[in-house]
Length: 341
Image (cartoon, rainbow, N blue to C red):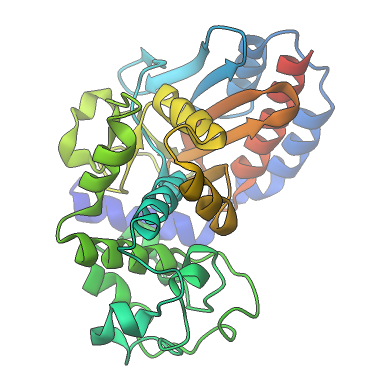
């Protein structure tokens, strides 16, 4: 089967889902919630595989204890390769934490201003986005811009855009969802624009800046900007319910190991790669944990202050109606309870 034919199947699956998943999964959520809590994280992961996930990786870094790695299921289902703790995973919107940290450093250095607008930084696109002379960098970082979300375009995930211009064209002519600063709506277009602004100000790809200022100081050698930088065999396979093919070769941005994400997240929460001014700026503009979703990949990076633990959870199975997302959140909460106990 050709790649074009596979994409057509994926568009259909993403659009309509499957009758089986619609009927059975809500009961599975209830069942996953009421089951007795296992004694160990590993037992919980093994149980989660029984709920329908193909592969899971969990990294736990609790203060005063050595980091722990847990896996269950498959790294590659077709080849029957067991899940690997050091596999690369598509971290999707977790990458926004890295973007926000990079913006913080550029603001601190005076190279960016949180109060300048899209019109100031990208005057060439003012005719495409409503209120471009009023939407500030701060509003975009905080998802308070009102700009339509380009990834909400029909069939986007079955045939993702490949360039800034192509992505922006998906919202051309669309009115603002609300006036700048007057509401909140999570929007990937905000970070599409932020990355373009950083590229223009730096004069080179902003991921190079992230490498220099964040990744290298933390010795994060297993964090990458795209599939083009990695050995594909090291990437965990991803699956979407109702679609029979492995999704790991689809390009969806940053990849990292659970360990690398965990180290970054703890450093972010502790502020160890920020100076005092940078710490204040970051705290004023963005959050300290995140999750991510692209077809085949669900990721969660959380810091639990009450137990001083950083926990990163990767799930390699998604579904059309996001039942697996709800299921993974139930599993995440149970893992936290196990760690706390």
